[in-house]
Length: 318
Image (tube, rainbow, N blue to C red; front, top):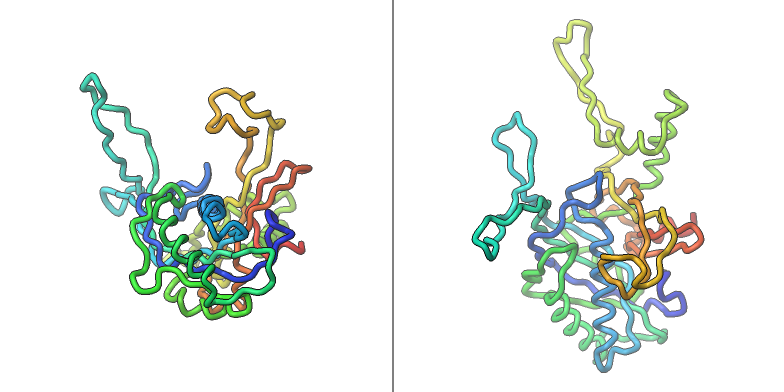
């Protein structure tokens, strides 16, 4: 279900197989780092959609929603020894015009390989995998995705043998094998609620933020009074591979008209001050997902609440 194109029909899915991304932004929010923010991928799909819709023969095609499967991930970090914290590796900028060394702007980067499955929408109810329009869509997507950035990183390659493939809506399960080996990022908001409720039984004042911090905490507990042995406890035990993730933004100011806010990134559009919203995500094996269509992330805007969210099909009915 697309929130951007509610009147169009989902006719199939496009798989961009094993996209190699270099120097993507590993700092996903003010509080989290590691895998790039989901908005980096939904934004890339939105940019690809705008380009595809301008191609002759594809004017009636729209792209929305993305399933994210990660095959490999390499954070660009360094630590001097095992007793020190990791720090991000920084790049040296070229010298300034006067020959002096330019200031270093601290940034976090990573290299990763991901497969993206993207929803294809049209006003037509019938699509054939052998249709000439589908061939044009696959070739166009292959060319365009290598000309743009994803999560701030540069696309340096796709799978050599089957870089882009299409399946009609009813055959989405055929993509499961293409995703292997990888882990798919899904929403784990239910786990966050369960962990919060568990903390509140011990501390009634505990909040969802406490639960979020608890998932990033390891408790070293002595097994006996003498402390001869220790055990490690975590609320994540038995719940799978849980990770804190940003899932959108909450507006904290009025919306300013286009050009009203000085030094905005794009003065052609309205602007607003926002704060990041956090939740839990979970990395799961593709075969653990009963229906792949429930693992797609969609952009959603709630104008009344000033919310800009990325959400999944499984959470839409909540």
